[in-house]
Length: 573
Image (cartoon, rainbow, N blue to C red; front, top):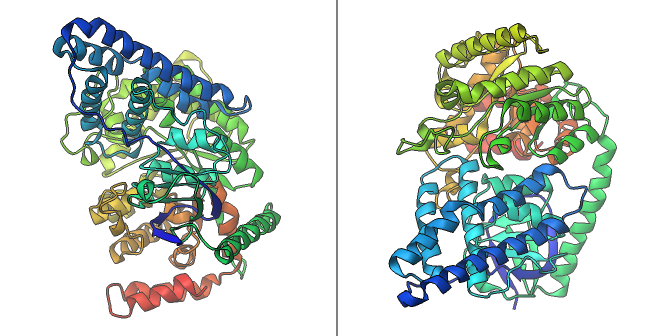
């Protein structure tokens, strides 16, 4: 009998393949002690387990094609480095020595201690590190328990079922040729979900108990658009989904015919479509798809896939490669957007609520010695192509003024040292805090451009954790309060005559493009894979008509006919 499950679809696309259930997360580690005379042998067993886990992971790394970009390999290297970290190696050994714990239990206790710290973190990048701890610990536990892992499995064409996946898992499995993945936990705005969209992997998350409801090897259908999972489907159902796959493949070829055409509405209103980039392969896609610009270049991976801090030269060489790789396409580099949860040059988290604590521009201004190498590198890299600087999580004008003063000081230092740099680089701000949206008029007098970061703006406005599986159903881009704030920012930009873009996930969703065009947005930044779909959608739209409809909608926010008016704009164009 056909099994049907529902979750949250996070990518467009359908896949059909055999289920491959990851055993990770199903390990039952119970408290156990050993005889004190066996402690040396237990420590040796633990060290051998780490060695075995490291060798398995190294085996995966060696199988990744040599043409793979360095940032992707860095995910694997991060896990290899963690297997040498004292927190995971030496502390469990100390627990074995002091309490005569079995190695599995000592490692589990240390895992619980580390996860407790990461569970308090709000920043998606930092939560990813919590998942990395889980992944590495599970690899070691499987070695201890002599359980075969999935590193040697043939995953080509398989549908992966797991409790959760890390971004590292996602990248590795993509290179192993997986067809799709399904997880029990996770939300549409998690880092893994965003990465899956970027890599074009059909996926559904939040399908509770899926690893227990399905069997290894079952034929599974994954509908990443509708959030539907089917198993043991009949032939007519399989034929229907295979037909959708064939149509999608044909559509992909059709969409490629739009490359090189200007993005305009039906009556010729010009719209700028820009790319959000993170991995080097995004640069190739941006150039190939002829995006108008890079509207958001995230720099966090430079900090997170390593032990220790990157120095100025590493920053500079990285940014220079990106700028030169874009071959003249303008790029907006977002400065470091991490929270105080990460130890930086001895700085440790003290806030009980990191989401509202020392993070992003707040952290950078508090720790200029950490921040200045990045600023210097950006100014130097801007010699090689058109660059803008974008500041995340602004909440008041003092932050802008301090940042500008720091840039001026940095320029003076570079000039004094005789190092080439670009001066008068445009500086903009991300509007992702409600206070910034409400103060957009004031920000337009201090900044050269604004970019609406809807992912966090929605999270902060609606007071929900966007990666929390329990409350992400409340994540609503069309909430009247969100629309009000977005309109305020767009209007402020129009009055001041400065560009306003949107770089959150909302910008790349075809459902919302008609509404945003009607609100006056003319610059969209999205995952490269969404550019051609957005362009196709724009060709169908009448901007003047949408503007009239949206003005009427904005006057009816919260009224009884609001949903009807919204549906007319979003689904009938």
